[in-house]
Amino acid sequence: MRKSQMKIDLSEMHPVRWCYEKKVESYVLYQGKQQIGPGGLSHDVLYVMNQSGLVPESALVGKQTASGIYDHGSVDDSLAAFAKSIVEKGPQKATRWREQVNAKLDEQVGKIPSEFTYEQKKYTPSTFLDYTGLKADDYISITSFTHHPYYRPFVLEVPDNWSKGSFINVPLGDMMKIIDYALENGYTIAWDADVSEPGFLFDRGIGVLLADKNSADNKLPMPELDVNAQRRQLEFETYATTDDHLMHMIGYANGPNGKRYYIIKNSWGTTNCYKGFQYISTPYVAMKTIGIVLHKDAVPAEIRTKFYTSSK
Image (tube, rainbow, N blue to C red; front, side, top):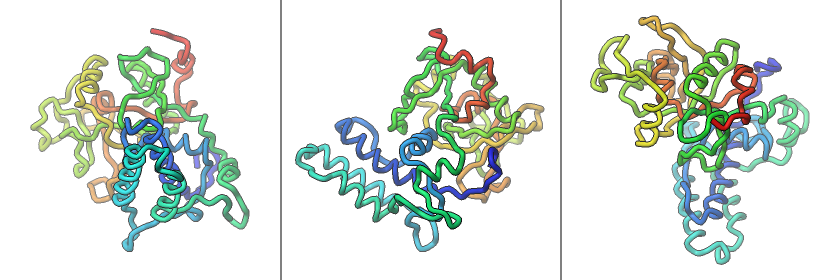
């Protein structure tokens, strides 16, 4: 929409279907030494775009329940059990296991079409990606931790990073500058964060990094923790910050304390006071962000020029 003004309803089940297959393959090839199950990171969609293109919703709706929702609990369980059985038997004994995985997914999620018609024209997933004008390589994954060099890529150590995707590591101040620059210049951000904090209050439409974790019932502004790179690293290494949930950061606003809050669109429904949106405080974003994915042009040039060139 931003680049071409086209409003295309893309199939969410296409990357879901493709990633399920690759997760099983990766689990088997790593001899069961990684997570198998639901979940992933935002760069998985970019991975799918590069490997399998895109398809519209009309070409792959996926299998829904009678009430029109997606419930992949049984898919998760059956694929995990199947993947584990392959590892236990040994792939040499579990013949044609890839074909069996595909058959299960075709039945339970849906089949990825090799060709389809959209607005009276035929496409493949690859040519449809060309039609959208989207390019996976235009997007970049960024994070901020102290156990890797800054301005260099590293594979982020969280269980859902099954695809072993890399993030550019930047200082905390730069990460916050990137977020602000992007939103101030009309870009949005895929935001991966910890949502287990008592101050992440979906019903109230806020997320605050409480200094007193028993004060979640108080009115704004609530006292919040000061955040620095060392405290952020400690929270990550002690599992106080974990990879919980992916959301869409779309803007910012000033709160009652005059501080900046970031507006995110959650996927937990529209039943809260802001119809599914939340206002997340600056300290919360600084402390609890696992990583962000955004267009490379949404990164300030003075920061982007440092990528890959520093070993500090």
